[in-house]
Length: 96
Image 1 (cartoon, rainbow, N blue to C red):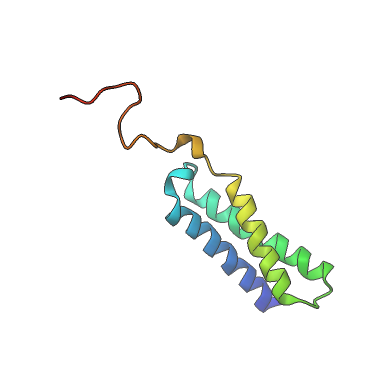
Image 2: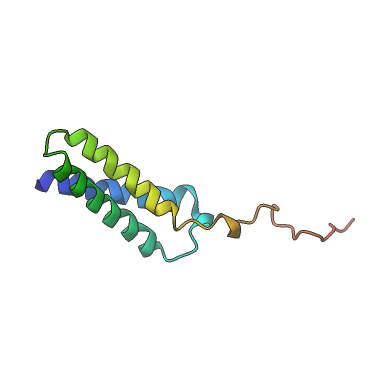
């Protein structure tokens, strides 16, 4: 049980850090909020999956832990705040 709990926590850390490294503009909230959301959701989802599967399929509970962590971290993403104009303001013309 201890090894699986550590594995769930590591999955959560990987998901949280990966989200911040790969898509930094999508997560304007505090970095600790993103990482802690990933870790807590991975732990909860992994433990719930472990108990519902009666400890029969540890690989499935690890996969469910990762999937739930990704889904709950994506709730924090703010794609509407990402600057897609390449640094230019919409409606402004570039000087000639």
